[in-house]
Length: 211
Image 1 (cartoon, rainbow, N blue to C red):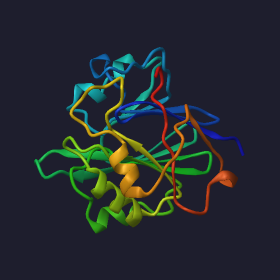
Image 2 (spheres, one colour; image 1 turned 90 degrees about the vertical axis):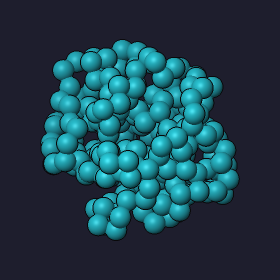
Image 3 (cartoon, helix red, strand yellow; image 1 turned 30 degrees about the horizontal axis):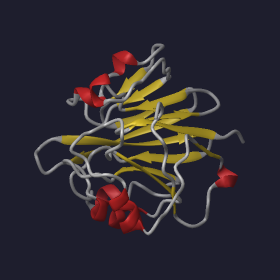
C-alpha cells in the first residue's frame, strides 16, 4: 500500500497526497506569512470559508473540487466527509474526515471549544488528527491536549500556532507539547501507511514548507 504524504504549509493548511490525487486543506493567503507556491490538488476543503487568510482556493494550481459544506464526497477514490461544528461566537467551522489509501485523517477545523459528544462520535478510528493548538479564537494548548486524549487518534499533528514565519496572535507550540508531554523532532513531512501507523498515541510536529 503506498504512503500518504502529509505536508504542512502553515496555519491550518496541509497537503495530503495519496496515490490517485491530493487534498489541500484551508489554502493560506500570502498575508499570513506563508506561501502556497505552485501547489496543486484535486480536492480543496475549507474549514472557514469566511476567513480569507485560509480560504485562498484561487491560489491552488489545477481545477480542484472545492468543498466547504456538510456532506459526503468522493474524488479519485478519496473519500471526504464534511462535519459542521458550531462555535460559541455564532459562526461555524467545518471539520473534514478523509480516507486516502486506507488511512483515516481528520482535520478538526477551527472550533473554539471541544465539540460535543454527538460530533466526537463521528471521529472513530482516527489514524491521523490535524488539530489547532495555539489559541487565538480556537483551541488553547490545554484544551487541545485534553481533546486529543478523548478522540484518541494514533498520530496527532498540531496546527494553527505561531512560527517564525507568522508573527500572529497565536501561542507557540511549546505550550501544547508541554501539556501533551511530547518532545518530537520537527520534520519536513510525514509519510503514513496502514502498516506504519503506531499503536500508541504519537505527536508529530511538521516544519512549515519554506521554513
